[in-house]
Image (spheres, helix red, strand yellow):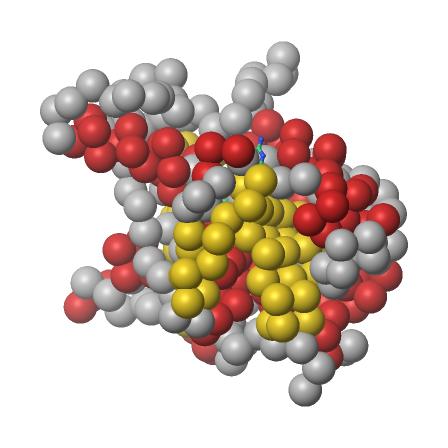
Length: 330
Ligand SMILES: NC(=O)c1ccc[n+]([C@@H]2O[C@H](COP(=O)([O-])OP(=O)(O)OC[C@H]3O[C@@H](n4cnc5c(N)ncnc54)[C@H](OP(=O)(O)O)[C@@H]3O)[C@@H](O)[C@H]2O)c1
């Protein structure tokens, strides 16, 4: 098998480290792995296939001969450096929000719109973590029953806000003053109905991402509304999802369909306390669904609960799956 030169930008971050781990776990055909981060990380190492690899400062020339560049260092860095990687001939798979809503840039979840991968012109965008786990579940349900409207409320892990956020939670739980703060309020013993910036209409940018990215990935115009909340968990994001369908469907039909959906695991036996939880989703690639039940307040309503590790399927694994599709050419 042909081996490929791969770069990971943001290799010292939560997502970047997971990317290196996922490349290793999935035996991605790597020839040379180039790890890039800020100047602060020069001298650090990240282990790949049992060998410590040096972290270099991100500079345009680092992309020479790189075929796949996985970016996870924030939108500002992606906007500045993705074009350099493309000029050197790499395909960029970008985890930031920089390019997601650009018309000619594919926004891809392989289980949902794999074909879009092959329409790229150098950059492929990886969706927002809370959107990825949502569309993996919505897609088969929409194909079967036609979705009219979705109301999603998220309970998002602090890992979704990067390593400083995790340190803030740990410091607060240990009753210490955090050296750096990611959130405007304490996150330990708290929850914040505030992820990313607020717009004038009262919604946050995270809510805007969930709504618009869902429609772009699925190629649909059904109604979606969202409330995104940060909670002091670390294993993954949870979502309460209320769906109104065009066609009649029962909770059992939904369970059956999702049981046969690749990438989805149904955990739904509430009488035995079985339902998805972030603590169990941690470090796994599946999207877990439970609490599947009828919503009698609308003609064809279903409520369900969706949990997935935002660092894995919500970021690193999805990006590596896209790179795998490119390598396979299908
Ligand atoms: N966390 C999630 O669940 C998730 C999910 C989907 C997408 N994303 C996106 O992925 C990106 C990274 O998230 P994260 O959670 O991994 O954040 P993180 O833990 O804070 O890591 C940020 C990474 O970016 C690097 N970086 C920061 N400034 C840089 C600069 N000037 N030049 C080069 N590298 C720089 C950092 O390097 P240093 O260590 O040297 O500072 C670090 O490697 C963000 O765009 C985020 O929106 C995150």
